[in-house]
Amino acid sequence: MPTLNPLPNRYHRLNSCVTESAPMVIDTEANPKDIFEAGVQRVRACSDLLETLHCLCFKHADVQDIPHITHALYLLAQDGNDLLQVAQQRMLNWQAPA
Image (cartoon, helix red, strand yellow):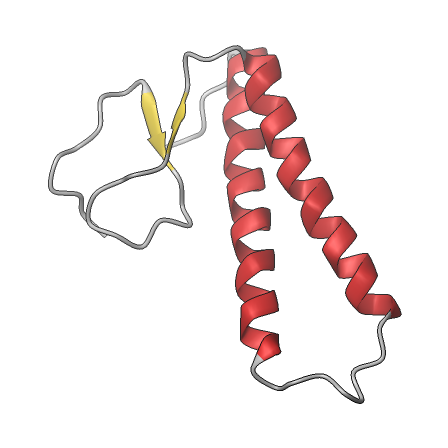
């Protein structure tokens, strides 16, 4: 999806963003350890939620809850992945192929 105002190279758009502008971005010049920790935090939250769901009985669950849960898992996993990718690039001075 094209943006109305392209971001400077410093800011990396989150892939979970579905809007024309990018209200949430990763500052690629932030401390790579901080970027890494933010990514790990989101992946860990996603993993914890999946573990909780694995242990639950859905006999009394509302069908409307499933899209809410999967959307939260998607956001956590995608944003965590984006953050970890930027941290990896910063820490290893690695550039993704075009």
